[in-house]
Image 1 (cartoon, rainbow, N blue to C red):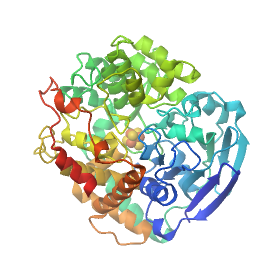
Image 2 (cartoon, rainbow, N blue to C red; image 1 turned 45 degrees about the horizontal axis):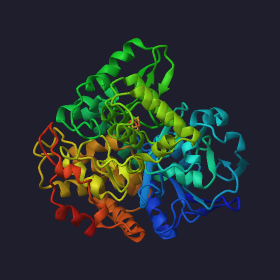
Image 3 (cartoon, rainbow, N blue to C red; image 1 turned 90 degrees about the vertical axis):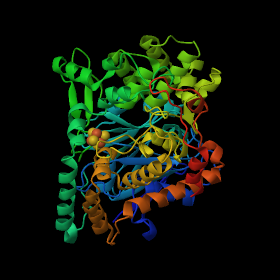
Image 4 (cartoon, rainbow, N blue to C red; image 1 turned 90 degrees about the horizontal axis):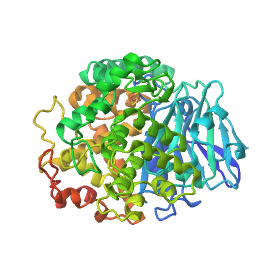
Length: 569
Ligand code: SF4
């Protein structure tokens, strides 16, 4: 039995409510969007008591389906002013599912800083004064106990800074983050510093009568996915493998998206990290960010002495904090990443904002040491620079009067230049959650040699297809990487759809993935329209359509009237 755990922070009350019949086929992003659409006024102040912060494991969390333990978090975003979903690895989704919790809905605001202990039957409210002003690493040390999943915010969330994310621990207590969209600020506005989920429960997710068929279908899915060559590459090199690839394409953000190639990209690459792994104790090029992962694309980055700096250092951070700021010292990028994890901010927003400091002449290009000093100012909340950075790229760019601010709906672009990867550009422009590469990143694939990412025609259809696909994947709670195999090998959809059919007791058709994603996006677009977002918000910044990028001599030229058809759907 799946329940919604509703927690009223204002009155220190909670209730476990059976998941309504009409939501039983949903989890993760789809469940969050539906609850927000039903229960939150789109015009509400994102940092006011009317907003709700929702955590939801994917529909398949806790099952044997590979990589199915992502935990989605959602609310109205203080960064984009629209609907937001961000998801993370870690242990939280699995712990929630095993406790029979389909969603935790946090309502109201506690009078004083609060922490919670959550299990399948109860919620304990505790004073969190002892955690006030602590970074996430200290919070983990203070709250860790045997078999638990910790969810927390750092100082940025407490200050309600809009680049704040929400940290979730892995089984081995490394912090991962639902980083994007300012959801940590929403948690801060509720005066909730942390909650600890009991990870000892073992409520069966798959009923005994379908277990055999379910396990067989999940095994067919795993076998097919893991045979895809991309999965082996991800296991050995992880997401940093993209540094050299995207640089080669000419789409690696460099010098605040002025260029698409960074001459020192090699120093930030997976190949360089692999060399470091040969000499540094405890350095790992392969690590699971959550239980049930069969790909292990993450890493543990250590210093020369073997002390862990971050687990892991991912492509988006290397691109936004590294090449985009022209910082070519990978150890410095890792240190900035650690500081972001601790204070609890999105490395992509911070990388985007640091580049704007550099563009404004307040910081030299490539000066990682001073950049780290600036990031350290976020925790104190007393300097203009720290507050600007903590509020992300748009706030920083506007305060420093920079013209070229790479954002959509207030959210900094990810590590792919839209003048080269134009389908991704359409996704940036039209995703309900702002410039979100995870909503539909249109990368070329050897399995689809006819796709030209630089063509101006056909990108809207590509983006829409991917947005529908990914909205469903985020609803099932599966990591996006293994699901890339389904794009190249459509036959692998069958065992996945069989698993969902068995679990929900329905017979789902072949178009389940496309149809479900489409419905979720329609709900999200309606919420955004109610919040006052219009077609004018579905625009890339003008400089991407005016400035030719020298790497490929292209601009973003997908016809705007074509892009506008997406939100007219
Ligand atoms: S493939 Fe990578 S991102 Fe996905 S669950 Fe595994 S470690 Fe995490």
